[in-house]
Image 1 (spheres, helix red, strand yellow):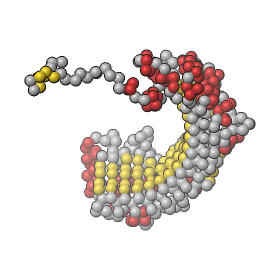
Image 2 (cartoon, rainbow, N blue to C red):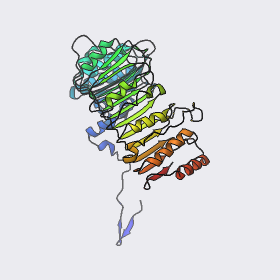
Image 3 (cartoon, rainbow, N blue to C red):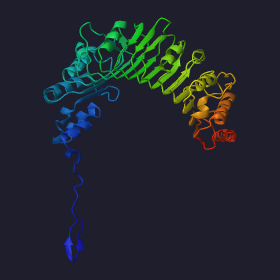
Image 4 (cartoon, rainbow, N blue to C red):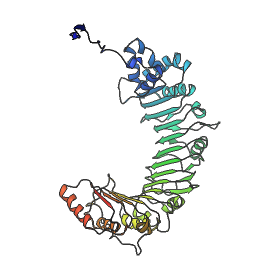
Length: 440
């Protein structure tokens, strides 16, 4: 670097060491937190960076093993990782989190050993995703008495065999069960009854040997059920828990019982078939504030006698036949509604290809929510080509006296079509002169 002349003397600029490793100067606690956010194969790789990093990876409280991201990984890698940690980390700290995404080339016995290690050393979070066409993996027996576990996520070929001995997940708050196998009804009941602090439960099922899937958890706040199977009219769900959030999707021909839901605030009922929706909607009608619905025509007939006293937000799919008739029922039975959102499912066929809907029938009396409370009207993937869509849009704009915002968004429409739809909507008479109109 050339010297500069300052006041008749030579003065050199302070040199900057561009090779300074600022990250290595961070405290151990912060470095371990950063390392716990990346895959374990990359964590171990940091040992070659410098003397500072040589043993740091051994204290990372997380094992993240995913055979899909790096084919170099094998079951031997996990064995070596745990053995090295056993002599270091387990003496001074905890193995708090394990994420195991494994395939059938891993022996089930090995996976049980890994999880067993974690349970013995303070495991708080476990995610197990097992891909196999040969067998279901069984969880190690010591996990059913794990007092530290707070999050448990099981997916695919995992078998839940709840033992007859004492089972207690005293700290478990989040439980995610996707396509796992239950031996019988009693296994389900015993598992949930052993979770006194459970707050969030996600269940996705296809086929298993459970007839009545019973959920009775007094602490539960959020429940999501997605069932891809056919109930055949003999299988069912019994839910008795004071939820805040409920999501039900994909059920076909199931018996259903909902009880004890005075605190329910949000519910989603999506793509159900051959189910008495009166049993689904009535228990939540007195408390639910936000409701999302996508019902087939046969299920809509049960809704006309149910009044949603607390409902302020309604989201309704326009992909189902007779959706507009269901809309009329819901508007008439939701006296305090403030936000209405209509949307067409992205996976559904375009409106031009669907079976024609019956003509939109205006209610004899304008629903009170339109006259007094509705403030926002959204229509996602609006397609004004179909007559019933144009009629519904016209009716809402003409009768919503306190509407502050109307937002129409379109997808898969060219600029000319959008312009024509915009002109038609703008020309419609509007009950609210202060309504802000948006078209995307």
